[in-house]
Length: 120
Length: 107
Image (cartoon, rainbow over all chains, first blue to last red; front, side, top):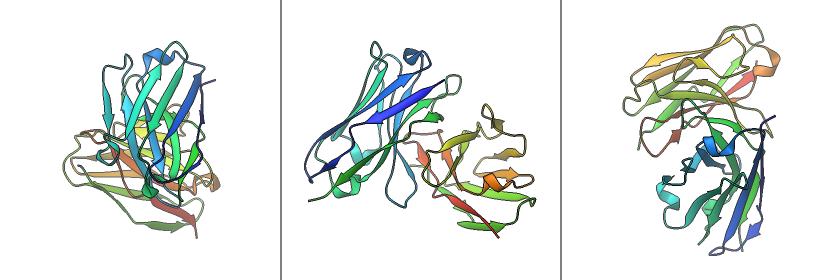
């Protein structure tokens, strides 16, 4: 069974940092693009970042460029999101998602999400 | 950035009825469009990708269509478990973008 389990969400002050992790199991992690999508409380979905299989390509939404870094460890079957200079509008549930093998940039499946709250 | 506009924002229907949800893009997405379903307290689930392909395990009552800038998700006969929020997403250009969602509620 494919599983994605996020961790690392927390309450952090504006300007602070946080590192999210996503543990993957049930599939060959190194074969897939992976991504992060967030959802602010009561709002819609927003793509945050994606990374290709060998880490040679990373992509970000403009609002997080220069502040967030997506990375992966294929040996550990893990995806990460380093979040620096956090702002109140970064408050959201952050989902880790695998991208479709034969048709990348569609997200399937998703983890259960981890909540990041940025507040003083 | 490609903006996706979903309509209606809320759709009130009864079980057994047909639902048609719309997603309009600010420029052509060349059929590179997907649909997701999200139920309260759950992560989204991929339903349709590349405009009309059902994802694994998705029932046949879900279908997608469209081209250029206009796309639809159709649920042929609503089941109680289909009442949820639906999002479209494009992958034609970076950044990947989602529509604002359509809430399908029980009438």
